Image 1 (cartoon, rainbow, N blue to C red):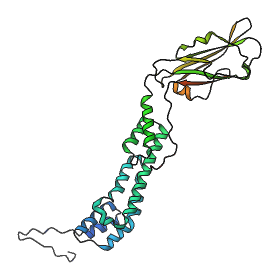
Image 2 (tube, one colour; image 1 turned 120 degrees about the vertical axis):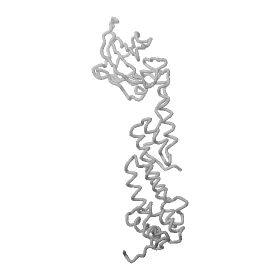
Image 3 (cartoon, rainbow, N blue to C red; image 1 turned 90 degrees about the horizontal axis):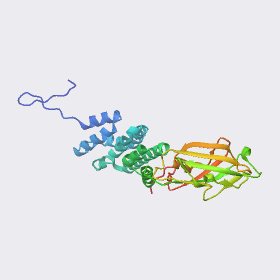
Length: 298
């Protein structure tokens, strides 16, 4: 029976075997179960039955093990918290004596994992700009390095649906070659946004359509009431040639669905004759800037 004599109690029942912590520690180390090994070594320390060689082996390899394990975990989105918790376990005060001089290295590893998790969560915000990604950062980011920017962007998303009174201004027209005119007569321009027209829609502009017409206050202006800046609006621009006798002939039409936000972001919208229209939109909250590169909090 392996040369081991089993002890028995007076009633004939065998005495319970006392497990040797060294055996358990060795099994854990051999299996690469360092989270179990650290607990077993702590118990062995308390019982004064630890093996100095095993403790030295643990300390020698624990940092590399934690780095490898947490890197593998953090590659899978749902295991981010697991990776952080795994690295953090070795830094619990009850393991201080076991970890010994590896504490600072393990702390650096934990911070590295936390930063990587934080970066991945922020990169998801940049990719989707969704409430879901923003909420995940709020709830799960361990460092919250980008919190000021994330909080500001989250407030903007929440405010977009509030009723506003946008002012849509047609500020510039770049005429296509086929639309340029230097003869007598004029041009009529009609702007409609969400069914609302502009009082000057019936006015004839005394211009020759040679290159570009621009007016900072707006060539045509439409003021809207109580709409969200995300609502899709029917944007229509009609261009008419007006001859010397005052007769109107439609030359081109722009018809597009855009929200006030999208209209403000457009660098130019082209109609069916190749004319390019530029707009300014007042009365909306513009999208705040999100840095494209994650940074470490100071």
